[in-house]
Length: 194
Image (cartoon, rainbow, N blue to C red):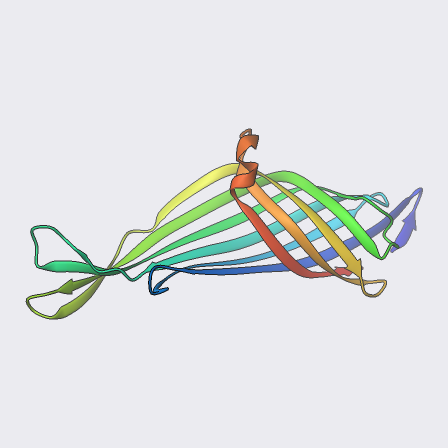
């Protein structure tokens, strides 16, 4: 940290991780697994306001092990696995809502984001008459969306230069604020101040 005119200047480097697993089905044979990773750097040009750059990658894997007959054929679908990957990178502003010297430091961030969504599905088929199992994968579908990101977080200072944090993050298509609650991520992570 150094003094530049009337402004305290410092940087924060942060990493976050989120994980969620849900089992469902009569025999708990199906699952939804979410993993999210993110990294960000914020460069403060006043004591409370920073320019922020961030990158995140999330993946949702939905696995269903149900046996479903395909009408008019000798095949059954015995399993599917859908993988959706969401890559987001963007930049914006971060506002620290208290002093950097405080033990508990809430903050909010908002800015522009570019979202790339990739989607593919594996299907497992069982040939009843020949007792053969085969797998087929769909072509990866890609979609790019100009978006807005936002987050609210809470840092708990451990030392002067290190903190643990928790945050709620969202990303949604630009100008569609009604969708802000459709893609929430609950993250935990670490922050270094230098």
